[in-house]
Image (cartoon, rainbow, N blue to C red):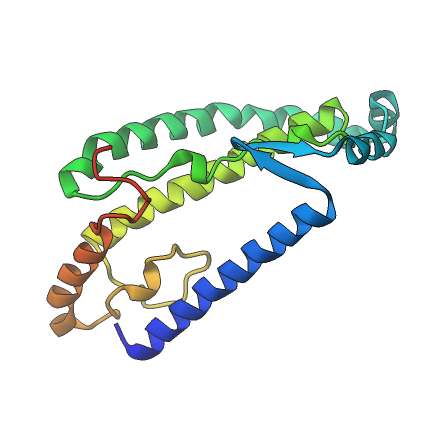
Length: 203
């Protein structure tokens, strides 16, 4: 991996740290804290939130008919999502210890906390739980797939790809036959490094 690529990756990590710092400032501004992973708002702020909640009857009355009609299509996807969740979780539990790759922490990606917001009505809370699960699941799956790819085939594609995982930038260049062997070894060394997910292999 080139020095320039390393510098870019370090800059990305710095930007991620800045985003986390901004989120922390938001906690102070909107007066909430995390206690054992649970969001706790100050009583006064929670009361203010309730004042902004749209009644369920008003919410449904204002919704466009086609939005209501298409809702079952969206929620029907919970079945393939749940199956994907199950199969990918089983896959990494069975295979990652064999490869020496630390398992991905599911809880680092799937966060269900928006239903604690008092300014959301029941339907909005349900929607937010579903979106949080679905999008978190996609991130969880991408991380597992990314680690798998980094172990088995760390080669960049010939054309640009959108939304690639965190390991892609360190892959061997497309067409670099001489660099593939050493690159594969280096990629496997990185992906099997203890501490990748903050816990031991096979834990």
